[in-house]
Length: 300
Image (cartoon, rainbow, N blue to C red):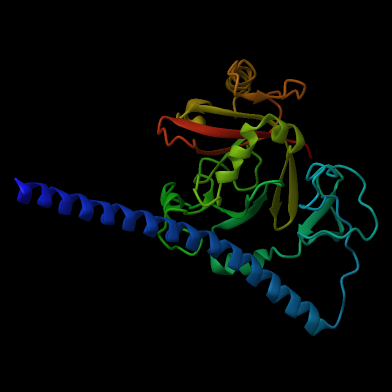
C-alpha cells in the first residue's frame, strides 16, 4: 500500500513539474514576443536619428495635435484642436510639412515609424495603430491570401502565441470600408490587445476615447463610442456593412445593447454613411464563445 501511495506521489510531482515548465515557457514566449515589437520600434527610431544626424539638420516642425502619453488628464485630448507651436511629445509625433488629410486636418506622422523600413521587413505591413492610454502601439498587417496566417505569426514570420495585429483581406487596406475589423491576441503579459480590457472600467472609457491609425501618406483619427463583450460571430460575415440597410441594422443592434458592463456612448451618432473600426480580442475569462470589442468612429 505504501508503495502505491509513493507511486501516486511521484506521478503527481512529475505532472506538477511538467505544468510548471509549460507555464514558464508560455510566459517567456509572451515576453519575447512583446519585446520584438519594442525592439522593432526602437530600431526604426535609432535609424532615423542616425539619418538626421548625418544630414546635420534638426527638424523644427514639431507641431503635434496629440497630447503626451504621460498626460494623466486624458490622453489624446488635444486631437482635433489647433496644435501649439513647437509642442513636444514623448511619442515622437510630428506634422509633415505642407500635408493635409482629406478633411483639411494636418497630416501627422510619428518620427519613430518608418514605413519604408517596415515594409522592407514585411510588405504586408500597411498601417500602425495607437490607442493612447493603453499598450496598443503596433504595426497592422494583412496577408493577401491566408486570413489565419497572422493569427499565429509575427510580422517577422515567426510562429508565436502573440502573433500580430492584423486585418483580414475582406477589408481594404485604406480603411475606406464602412466597417474594418482589427484583430489582436489578449496576452497575459499586457502586450497586443490585452490592455483593451482597460475599457471595462467606466472612468477609463470616459477619459480615453481616441484611436490613431498612421499610414504612409495619411493619418486617421477615430473616436471610441462603444466597448462591450459580444459573441464570437464573424462580424464581416454576419453583417455586410457596404450595404446601407445591413450596416444600419448592425449599428442599431449595438445601440440597443443593455448589458450593465457594456459602455455605449449614445450621444455619438453613427449612421450607415459613416466609417467605423472594431478592435476585437478574447475575453479575460478565456471563454471561447465570446469576444471583447472596442469600436470607434472615423472623425476625419
